[in-house]
Image (cartoon, rainbow, N blue to C red; front, side, top):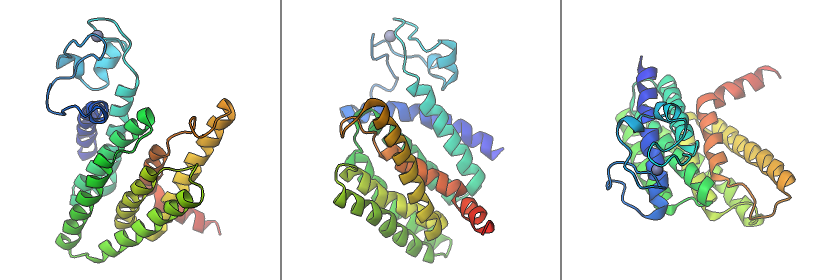
Amino acid sequence: MLIALWAVLGLVFGSFGTVAAYRIPKRQSLATPARSYCPNCNATITVVENIPVLSYLVLRGKCRHCGVRISARYPLTELVTAVLFALSAWKFGLSGELFVFSALFWMLVVLSVIDLEHRLLLNRIVYPLFLVGWAALAVMAFASSEPEQLYHALLGMVIFGGFFFLIAFFFPAGMGGGDVKLAFVLGTFLGYAEGVGVVLMGMFLAFLLGGVVGILIMAMRGGDRKTMVPFGPFLALGTAIAIFWGQGLIDAYLDRF
Ligand SMILES: [Zn+2]
């Protein structure tokens, strides 16, 4: 019940996330205009046309007013957010963690969509995420009388962030400063949620996924730095997988040996 409810909430936040990812890099207001509009003909999108995923399917991915194709990025963003919200509800139940980590995943989706389009991890999002994240985790840790969780968060931050800092330092062609800053944020949340073992698993997954996809794309396009894939989405994906299944993966691995 909670999972279904949270999935629907994820669709709604995913829909708002597409708006945020479109407007924040352009420095447009998130509040006005309140309604989304077609980027081609500027027609305002009505409430009925703006039901997450469903409207896209009914309209067959076209603007009802001018017929221009609407990118599949919008329904995909909504779906991914819904899945992350549903998994958060499954993992954390109704708790403070559920709210904090749902907010984290929502911001990671927005960051990833912007990074895929503009190859930028905006400081305007990463810095507040870091500061508000630490504040929220501190409140939760003391509210649940588990202040040692903050120690895990600190350790996670240093390990995850430090690792990618070293990579960026020695191989500056492979990774940008934005990736390193995001890694410090992700390590914090990962350490808090699951501890150091899973932080290492998250790093490994991000590195593996980003590396494999990067090599594939470079092989297909014969690429250089410019054609390289943005790394932010892989950092986020590796972290998400580690939060939900990292401990399970570690246990399964240890069981075999
Ligand atoms: Zn239009």
